[in-house]
Length: 107
Image (cartoon, rainbow, N blue to C red):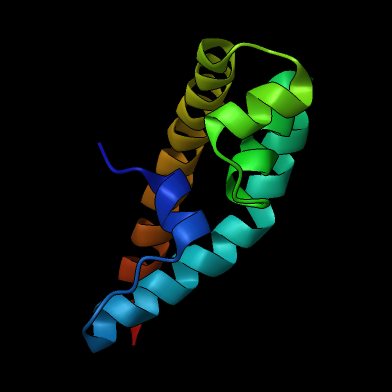
């Protein structure tokens, strides 16, 4: 399975004109939808752990210390959050890819 979350936060580059265009379109679409998914689909703890990991670059042990949780609990929150995000982003990516393909056929 593609890890859209890591791709989004770590900005994995792509080579090739068409792939670059698709990657830019995916990134722009995800910029709009990721905050909505985080706000509306994740629990508060999942959201906090995810933000500490990806936005603040904290390790699971650091997050556990900050939130006074065990490291396995932090790991479960992050994995659950990534599952929700990846599932939602998968559908977003499929729709985006179909839209781009249709647009290119019309050109």
